Length: 214
Image (spheres, helix red, strand yellow):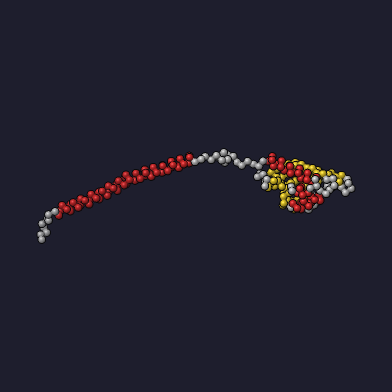
């Protein structure tokens, strides 16, 4: 073997391999450069285009949604309670009470009160509950020649229209134990509560304008 002598084809094969390796490296670098300077903008443009498409689609869907034409959109709130109708109903209940009392129908008169009503009058303990009030009315309507009347002076309502405060006056005539006609005038304060569309007395206080015997 002679090391100083070149074997045929050895240098050309090495050069060819080196060339191929360098070409491959250049291809890789070119690919990286294309990715950095071309790929990123393209990806960015693609992402921006996608965002724009989504935004347009969302706006289109919103514009195609049915418009809110409800009361809130029109600036209309729930109408307040019909004060005139409620006031008329309370006044009607007042007159029905006097009618029932004059007819000596204590049970019907007691229907003006709620089950938990409180009734107070001068010179007597307070009464609690419809049954206690009905028993009181049972005795009251026994007065001979009894005649009652009255009317509201003022009626005010709570903000939500479920409670009313009434001040009023009444007159009462009857015959005493000696058959003498007695006539008195008085005033009252009533608290009404609306339940299931009906007004009921929940509290009442009344008194005569003058003490008995004056």
